[in-house]
Image 1 (spheres, one colour):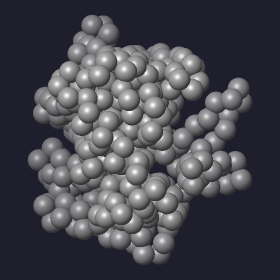
Image 2 (cartoon, one colour):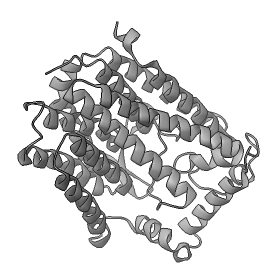
Image 3 (cartoon, one colour):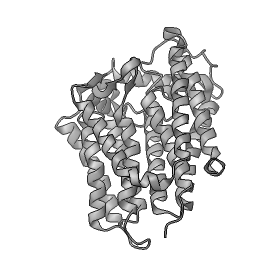
Length: 364
């Protein structure tokens, strides 16, 4: 019966984005590696969809009970990355290699762990009309601060920011006083400043942030890359150059185009209308998550939905913003569209969480 009550619009939108993502990944990589990455993207999509369907069948009371263990598992993954088992890729120690040639990025899955953990702390054990006490809000921020700190040690500023804004959204939706939200925003800003000042970030990551303000600081590195991205998007016009016909994309002028800059493939080859359609689908997922939150009779389900909406909203804005040159480059993937197994699994699990939140039994 839970399958019948599931919000299949969420699944259709997410599947549509994932399939278009496979086409964009193919276009950006077929001239160098053939269809290999596009096929793996489809495999990741299939696995992710399967994980989401499992969550549809999960009783939300079990999810609540498992929340501490899910959170601790997320922390364990982040600690493993910092151990000798962790692998450094592109200057960030964010990966664990698995048998069979697979790899895992625990920071992506920590988003799921934090959404569930925050909802548990801020929803359980209090009257429906009473806002969370200072102790409960502080506990939530400690709960968020631990994975954020571990992720900054990798270092991975982009994912740390996602967790920070996710936490701000959940705390604000919990009914906490506005002062807590203001303090939280100030804390995120302070954390970014500290990461730059200590410094925790690698030189290339600092260059990304500084080049956002002045591209001439790194004209042959990230400054060149972001110019090529904007050129690709701008050359697409209204209708695009056609799939496999974009000069910038097919010429290989944009490094990591199939991950960080997948939106530039859409902008160049699908044009304004195609890119706008993808933005609309992503917007639908965010609005639908907020709809689930507004209509949930259960505090836990409501906060889970707000957490997913905050995560998708910030990550989508940040990724598209860095493609358009209005946000600094932080290496965040575009949900469902960018290539990457861990990101795909996390995004599909988030869809499953939304479906699970919709099926939450009323608790008064």
